[in-house]
Image (cartoon, rainbow, N blue to C red; front, side, top):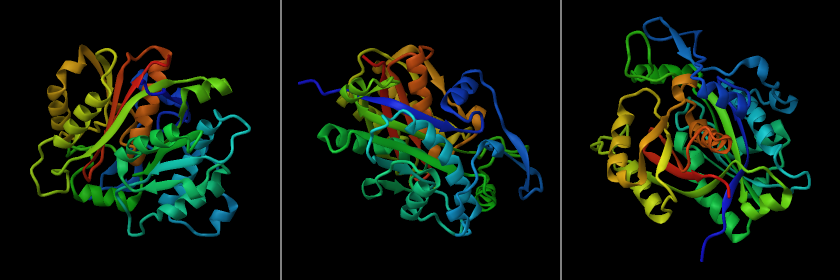
Length: 354
């Protein structure tokens, strides 16, 4: 018996190259980069180059939250998430009750790590979004976190536990402590380091529901979720074990075995950020599952335009892929994957809505 289709029925993105999904997608498609120098300096006393969201495009921090004297990074993330979450929730029917949110948070912490449960509470205060706090979860898993949540989100929808589920991520690597730590690890791209990445910030959220739910409410559908999965790389960036690229390769092969694509994969959205480390795992995954890919498959890695969005990166890639599939400028099926620094790997396969 065929499984009922699950679809993406709404999405919101805020990034250095756009204050909405449409704006971010247009900039990424046109290869328009928005990376700039800031006042903060690295250990060579050169200004950091980052991807920063324009401050004048963000709302002020809620008056109740200003009383808490939150760390700069957390306050910044709440303001960025506000815009993206508002765009995603605009797709929901007006009569929608509170819904679950599965949220990805940073895996790189300052001296004052973000309290996931408290962040969810503050996000509701900041945005006024219809989020059911009791059924929502936030995890500090970095780039892959938002895509890792798709398995759980789809299971909830298939069981009928939820009518809609929000999945997403928010992060800001444009924080002085985080920048200094990454700079000491020689991971930030600069005039002296070509094997590095550009730190950035952003947020992305997607609304998932059953296809029949979207049809009942007359919602426009971006793409169909053909499958999703996740894995773990033992030889990750901060591990002493050998880096073999097994985590992503196993996740991709398991996904394609469980959910064979209806046609050769025409496009891949990757979390490549400019560090050479990430090339090997994709090569291993691509070779092991070569029979599933079109010979002229497209490769998209938006970090070249907006920088590395940390925990927002995976959801942003999924939103951009879904937008491209719906508008017809990206070929489906489309594979999306995101890899976190501490080993988590997540993949999803998107197809055109039926």
